[in-house]
Amino acid sequence: MVENGTLMQYFEWNLPADGKLWKNLAQDAAKLMQNGVTGVWLPPACKGAEGASDSGFNVYDLYDLGEFRQKGSVRTKYGTKKDYLAAIDELHDKKINVYADVVLDHKSGADGVESVSASEFNEKSTYQMIGEDKVIGACTKFAFPGRKGKYSDFVWNWTHFGGIDWDQKKVKQTISQLTGKETDAEDGKGSFDYLMGSDIDLSNREVYEEFVRWAVWYVNTAGIDGFCLDAAKHVPGSFYREFLNEVRRVTGKELFSVGEYWNGDVNVLSEYLASANAETSVLDVALHYRFYDASRAKGAYDLRRIFDGTLVDRDPMHAVTFVDNHNTQPGQPAESWVEEWFKPLAYALILLRKDGYPCVFYGDYKGIANDRYKGEKALLDKLMKLRKQKAYGPQHDYFDDPDCIGWTREGDEDHKDSGMAVVLSDGKGGTKRMYIGRQFAGAHFSDIMGNAKYNIKIDNEGCGEFYVNRGAVAVWVRKEPK
Image 1 (spheres, rainbow, N blue to C red):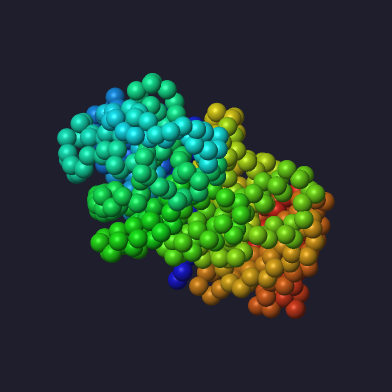
Image 2: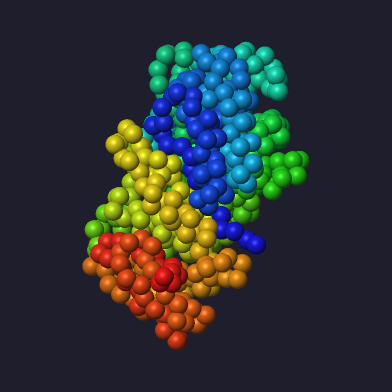
């Protein structure tokens, strides 16, 4: 029996640096399983340049999962290696897969400085070189003295990088491309690929081979089931095509992966998938922006077009759908927070339909303390359970009104009492006649979301008159009167 998959991103940017996330996750595992979560996306578990306060995205040592005293601490922001492995074991015990966020684009917190030749670029438009080659002090030596060669004796030097953001010789911030280096990934500002820190040269064969060794070690050590590939737009798809194939071959594991390619143009997302030979899925950023626009339109959005130009519409097998995540939450560079009134509608659109692999955001689930946002835990628990128990069988769409759309799922024999009708409106609401299946003729349905206080009866043709309130979502499931 095939169960619907639901992914949860179990972190947000402003989590406290108290080292408790892994322990909290282990305690939540049973509840997550009950609510239908089948996979969790975890933040980078490695030691970052800021030690115990680092989110893990300022990568220092990929092999330090909270085991070595480096950068002022043993644990990471989220806990110790022991805590991490215990949480993964608990998740696996509950049949939940673990996907690790990995950052392969850059490193930070170098252990030494090297004198190298480089060209300075304009920080606002990296098409523009603003100086001749000159010798700078590059933070490119990574020897990891706290680890003392355990797990890997690989020492990083300037040849393994393409660009940097600091000239130690002049003690100033600067973006420079090392002489003789070429990059081909898009950065959104220009032709020179640069994101942050010491930018890794992914065309260097020594780098590729070390990343493969590390990934095999990581999979075997932590037992992870796949990767969330951070900042994918800064990493050529061809790199991930070769990298993922090799790590899968060596480990013998399927290793699901999803790339975080931040671009709202579905054509760009499709092109990236093609360059990676579809060895990874990608986040459906295009759909996120549809939700963002609809939430800000306050009822003036044409809901019939909500999936137009999205990856889940064009390539559902490779689309990881989401409403918000750590990049879109308030205060982040890509801030595009879907307004709270629209969250129930948006989550219904990803959780209760047949296409895409939906991802629930920790910030929406548990709240974001920094922004005094309490989250939507009760709502999301309900929708996730509905996905787990009811959202099966053929789907019939009724995207025939700009303010009120709906769909039905007929259910299947493998899931008792499955099947549902969903209606949502960003306007005045109303009633929509929809076909749910002749097998339900004479059956009674009730709105589990509380819009309507009455039951309806399915007619002999398998249709019902399903109601929804203004600016709300209704989910009708079978419920016979006592």
